[in-house]
Each structure stands twice: as C-alpha cells, then as structure tokens.
Image 1 (cartoon, rainbow, N blue to C red):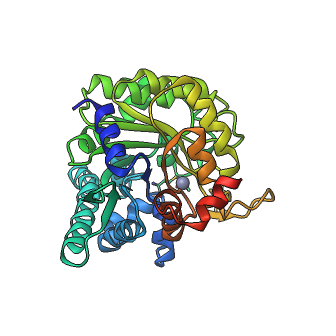
Image 2 (spheres, rainbow, N blue to C red; image 1 turned 60 degrees about the vertical axis):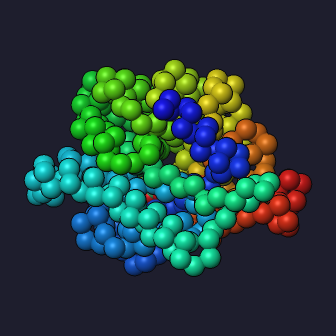
Length: 342
Ligand SMILES: C[S+](C)CC[C@H](N)C(=O)O
Ligand SMILES: N[C@@H](CCS)C(=O)O
Ligand SMILES: [Zn+2]
C-alpha cells in the first residue's frame, strides 16, 4: 500500500483526526526511573521492559491512536558503548517494537473481553485503530548532550556520515512489525535529507513521518528554515506526515501554517510542556516565558490551522492525552467550545 494511503485510511478510520501518545520518557520517570544515562529512556529496554509495556498501555487507555516505541535513543552504537554485542543491540531495537505491539494486543484483548472501546461514526461502530510508530531519534539524541535542541553537529558532519549512522537501525525497524517510522525531534535540514535518502536507498516499504523541533516558531532549532525542512519531507514519497514535536506550545500554530504552505501531507504535532531541557543534569526546568502547561486548550486552533495528528512530547502525561482525545472526539465536551473560542 502507498505510504500516504495507509495514513489517510487510518485518519479516516479515526474520524479525520488521530491522537498520538504523550511524553514516553516522562512517564517512565513518573514511575520512578532515573534516566540520567547516555541511553536515556532506552535503558529501560534492558532494565524494565515490563514498565515500557505498561507506559504504552497507559497511553492507550488515555485514548492514543499512535504509540511511539522506546527506540528514540536506542542505537547500536549506544548499546555497544555499554558493552552489549551488536546482536544484543539489534535484538533490543526489535524488542522495542515487539513490546509496543504486545501492549496494543493486550489493550485490544481487554476491550474485547470487557466493554468494547467503540469509535462512533454514523451508525458504524469499530474498535479504535492503533498504529505502532517506531521512534528514530536524531544523531544529536545519541550524543546525549541535548544536541537535538541545537542541531549543531560541527563542520565535519556530512550527509553520508548521518546516513551511515542511522542505516542499520532504520533497516531493523522497517522489518520489525511497526506500522510506521517516526523520525522525531529532527534538529536540522541535513539530517532530514539524510533520512529521505536513506528511505529511498534502502527501499523502506513502511511509511514514515518527519517531525522537527523548533525554539523560535520560525526555524528548526539549528536555524534552518522550517519551510525548507518540510519541503524535504514533502519530496520524499515514503513520508506520509510532516510535523513538529518537543517544541513549546506557543510556537505550534505558526509552524503549522508554515508547513501547510509547502505540503499537503497530514501534519502531526506533539509539543512538549514549554519547559527547557538542561542536558547537564538531564532535567527539565521551568522557562521564564508564558506558562504552557494547559496547552490542550490550543488544540482546536491547531486543528483549524490544518493539523491532523495531535499528541504530547516531553513533560506531557496520559492526562494530557486524555484531554486531547476528549477535545477531538467528545462533541459534548465543554473544553471543545473553550478551545474553539480561543
Ligand atoms: C528529547 S531529550 C530530553 C532526550 C535526552 C537527551 N538526548 C540526552 O540524552 O540528554
Ligand atoms: N518519543 C520520545 C521523544 C523525545 S523528544 C519520548 O517521548 O520520550
Ligand atoms: Zn520530547
């Protein structure tokens, strides 16, 4: 099936809009995990696979239609640096997808056994569609120094080096049983181009989304133009959606409008809470700017600007996702009228 068809069919089945999950690592931390480690959330694939499954389930229970795997910072290079063999590293990357698929199975079995979770559209009732998106974090994520928020890889970085860095993990994830690959928190145009060439060269036959991060609402974090970055995604046939993640909510509306100008592909957005990441301590700190915690009230505006998939990134929780789901699908929700008034 054409990548774009898979995603448009999925969106149609969801009722036009889909809910993405929320901060994955955030939820691991809320369950007591210390992620101050070069592998960040991927360390839980080794130490706490049951908790990884539990967090996926929590997001499914909250209403997510897309769950994103624990592979954001799961790289062969990162696992090898921890002393694991190449084979063990590859197994863990596959396992990240298997665990998410297990969570989906448990969720659907539970819905069948107990009361079904129905999506009501006209007279048709179907079970809520759920896709598993295999996360690929940037080269900057692997560096584990917050480089995904600068996109500064130095002058010696090239497209070939980036392709070689990402190649094997992308090959593995494409054959892992995931429904799509989520290239997340992309900080610069060079990495987007590397992903696009990699998808082409490797003949990757599942869809992908490209999601960029921004800290000014105009450019991606490196300073490259969002329009140029989104155009790279638009030109790649495997890319079925383009968007923004791990970016303060106040920047999202303008970024959706900029993306919309260069592509007709569905727009995915999953902002963070608006806090700032301190890479040294691996902690989030409150910014001096406006409080964005209640960004759920912006969802109606983002939908009107042309976004189709909505979720949360770092420092958002199942509560955020539950509220987004209610706004999008519960027509009687008071929050909907509040969001539309904004
Ligand atoms: C999306 S950031 C918060 C992930 C963690 C970062 N790559 C680090 O390792 O510090
Ligand atoms: N999927 C990752 C994104 C980090 S920016 C997570 O939610 O932890
Ligand atoms: Zn994030």
